[in-house]
Image: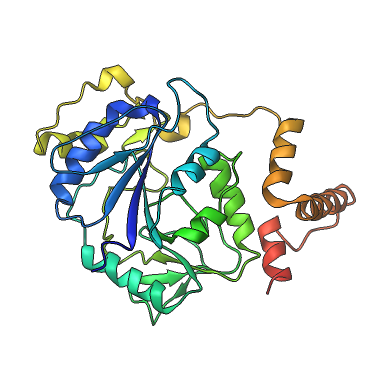
Length: 305
């Protein structure tokens, strides 16, 4: 195992410093033999825990607002390894990490320079192709939903850097980096649904888990915390008391700033192509002409075959 080839980047922010202690204490329990360097991506604060070497770069002054994309790119300047393993601050481990599986993925990426990332969680997509060569994984199609996501993943560092734009937040990045990935020749793999997750943090798709909208989803973390002697006052951050489907949604109309941000993310030509397709589809609807393509992704699947 080449411990000098992978860095773990734990992505967070100062406002979430209260969840660092349960995160890293569970990390110490379930990944005590972690051989890799750890960098905590946050603004100004620092965290230490005996038994774990955590680098807090403290690149910014307290209360300074820095765009997420800019911050992640500036932290990546300090990552000197060929690969970076991406985690989020509320990925509370609830089982032992499989080092061998991570090393297997690293070896595959060494042998195939075209692989950008292995994601350690499944993504439902009928276009996924079960991989015979990389057992336990599925190759993402050329065009697919959440082809790029913020789930735990082993990335080639250069590809992860290239996937970001400075102005993007995590939600914009997942959407726009997915779109950008349609136009490169890189390969992306996700864990097969029936294969065990080598980094198990209890992800539940379509359901509330761990921390949602800044609130604790107590039922998904409490048993794990109690079992490992972690005491958390959930009321300080607040508790999610409704189904995820009932959370308030951001229904505000798109602004010129939103459109400019999208142009910066995908480029003017691709922005115009998408809006032209939507205009033509809208005109067809007005004149009662049924569109054969249900959405723009389906259009791109047909174009980028």
